[in-house]
Length: 214
Image 1 (tube, rainbow, N blue to C red):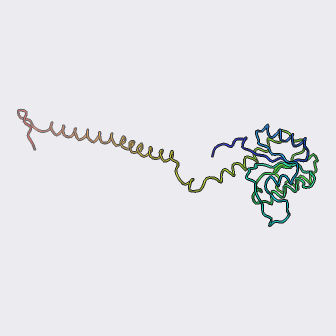
Image 2: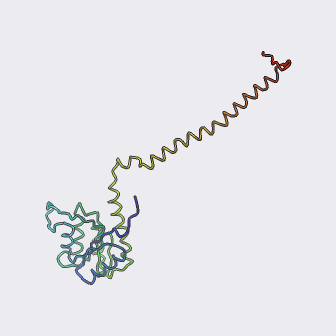
Image 3: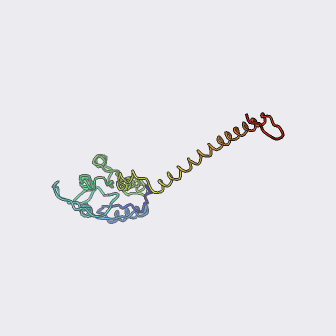
């Protein structure tokens, strides 16, 4: 599998504060991410194609869009960031998407509750560039997991054309090496046979250049 480029990451940012939305959008864009911003949790669900209904049997209509991470404010009117987190984690289609919570209030119980519900990180506002850097491993995991599902088992079991070519080249090479190893032995045996013939010829009596056969 090739390397994942950062520009392929798509982040959904949710915050009811216009200023905070613009700030997180700018930070994510500095990290070469594509960013979609909404101002409520309900709009985030609508963008994903999830229904806000509490009916577990309600049908979901998923958007044909790939989201690698959701970052949401905790305190928002209507649906809180915690409620949005729960909705995402309850969805079979989107539960694998990493969710990060932001808040201007440092409340340990709130932080623990979000992390227990499945949040990857909990950032205190104002969010810094160093915080955004922590998001990359989470986004990378979702991207690699999705790309890892593409090749089938049959494709993995089949040799690539270049691999087949390498095997074909190795076989003649091995045969050539075997011949080279045998050649010295053949030459040695041939030389030994000739020496025996010469030795036998010398041992035979000669009369006027006539060789007497035994």
